[in-house]
Image (tube, rainbow, N blue to C red; front, side, top):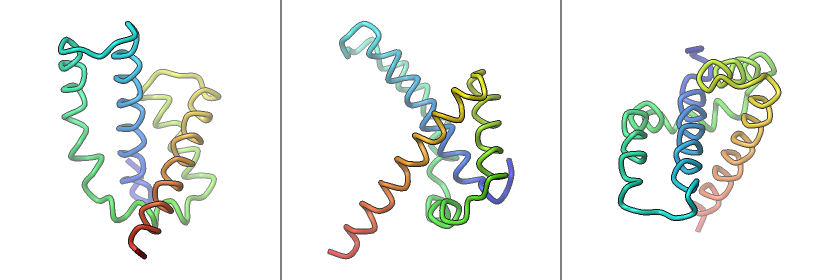
Length: 110
């Protein structure tokens, strides 16, 4: 994984996996005990997604076009999506991460 956006890439993959799991769980319109194995499928992604979280703000702040394209390519290869689908999903995820960073940064100031 490209070192300049390593942590960001791992988190983006985790968010994508979590979204897929949530979609699978909600496919029948309800959440039940039978959905637990789907949630456990996320466990292997936790360490890589959340180790190094402190580096993500810096990776986001200086994200350039080449790095953004790398993240799109990473998403394409992981989820077997088209380039446009991946670009749209990556943009949504990055916007969400920026908003979370602003929110938690604001909480620190309280």
